[in-house]
Structures are given as C-alpha cells and as structure tokens.
Length: 210
Image (cartoon, rainbow, N blue to C red):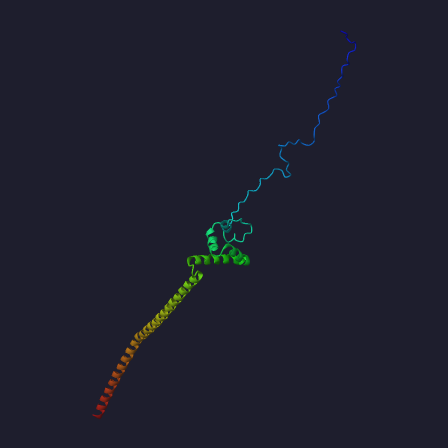
C-alpha cells in the first residue's frame, strides 16, 4: 500500500464578530394585537332600536317605511282601528285620501272614516244616514219637550203673578180696615155730638119762650 506524503489542507473557518442586536423603533405588531385607536378606548356601538311596524303595515304584511303615511293614525296598539276602516274603504283608498289632504286634516279624516265604517258595519243599509236620521228625530223630540216645558213655565209664572196680586190686595184691605173703623167711629161721635148740641139748643129756646 502506498501512502501519499501530501496531506489535504484543512479548511479554515472565519468567525466574524457578533453584530449588535437590531432593535426597531416601532413596536412589534402581531396579528392578535388590537388596531390602534385615535381617541383612546373604543366606545361600544349603540344598541339597535327595534321599531314596531304600524297596525296597517302589519295587517297588510308589508314593510313599514320611515315616512309611512298610515303610521301616525294607525298605531300598532290598536289594530282594530285599521281593520274596521280597511274593511269598508280599502287600504288604497285610505292612502290616496290621506295623500290628497294636508297633514292638519288627516287625523280628522281618519276619525271620520273609522266612525263611518263602524256605522256601516252596524247598519249595512243606511250607515251614517241612519244615525243622522235617528239623531234628528231625537233633536225634534227634545225640542217639542222643551217647548212644552217653556209653556208650563209661563203658565206657572202667570199663576204666581195672580197669587201675588191677590195677596197684595188682601194685605191692602187688611191694612185699610182699621182706618175705615176709625172713620166710622169718628162719624158716629160727630153725629152724637151734633144731636147733643141740637138738643141743648132746643132746650134753651124752650126756656126763652117760656
């Protein structure tokens, strides 16, 4: 076996001095860290406000928009109000009528429609006309009773005036009786006095003639 005199050179390893650690001026951000806020702590979101649809939209099964024309007059707490009006007039006619009127007259219009619808349900033949005729008959009856009462009152006042006149006459007669009695007594005394004087005069004349 032949051994070679040459020895393979050993590779040198150069160790460089340790470099100082690198520090970043900005803070390290991790995916789990919360995003920075400009105003400090984040305020919680406002609670969601649940707006109940009006009775009209709820019965019609439609979405109640913010400026629903029926919402101010048909609240969700009184569904019978819209049910009655809808049964007689229909939703489209109610909406059309309200849109044609100014806002100051819509409440009165809705009240009138609800009243008329109730009257039509109670009396399908005459409706409000029947109620009006009934009220007119009541007014006529009350006017007749009022006229009768006024006539009785006038009669009673006349009777009272007559009684007062009779009472005054009796009082005046009672107050005048002592005066009449005194006058009669005075007249009687005057007659007696005259008779006495006459009798004295007759006696004097008789003595003179004797």
